[in-house]
Length: 387
Image: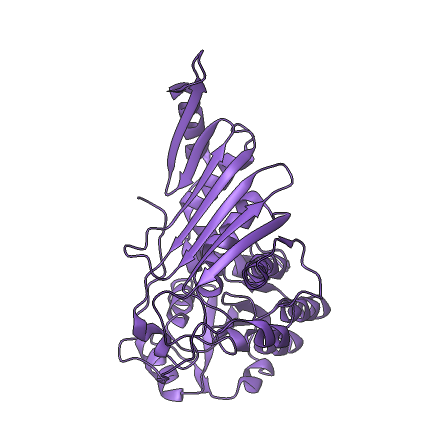
């Protein structure tokens, strides 16, 4: 039985607790930790947990009866908590984004290597059947190379969203919608297509004058083989229509799933290719359904690695760092107005947390701060099943 602690009992922690309790024959939540013990107590009662409640994170890091820790705190705390728990011999599953800076990511990776413990970064969208199947199709080779990709990370958040005490500041949230919302789609894009060679970007704050950070960004990525990709990160899009679209040499495929293949007429104009579409559909359908999806799928993956005494998980710290590297490059390109080359080097303006705080633009200053909302319900975005 794998013994689990959860640090941070805000909205996202419930996704972890639902997963752990649904896998209760393999793991048990033995500790909850939060600076507000009443929040932890409420979740203990809600999920009928037999666990201790702590307010001091150091007690979790040194707890002899904890094997795995879920870090569900605001982003600025991720690195230090993860490192402390890794140094304490715990496996760690840390919520996205992995950390506030690449320098922090590198220290987390060093701690994982030194302790020989798992460091996994929440990338729950990888664990949806449509995304697994889409990767299988793209990796099959049938479609040829990707020539253009489109990641629409469309969310909508009201003005009061940024009133929460840690949101809307570079110091505590670490960035705006690019870091904390589009991280999902940026992670999937780099997993499905790989890392670009360079990118350009612009950012803006159109609708949230109570936040320092951006609420809209657009990036264009360039790949060594000539392919291009575009990422729109937003919390101003009504309807929250989220999708990944890949135009390849032979067809278009997307999540939510759609396929369209064209062939050329004698004059160069297109006509539909139903034969190719059928072959693509067959490859899509042949990939088996995964038993657990979303956070539960990722936690199942981590538990299996622990059970098998393996350090190999689908979304490890190196994958989490790639995603943050792309986000960091978007911020640097937007700030400087110049094309940014990848991989980023330690002299990047945004490589360290200090560099971010010194260079990041303040669109506005934070004007309100509340400890929490009466309604703690959150939404996690699309599951990519249907348009």
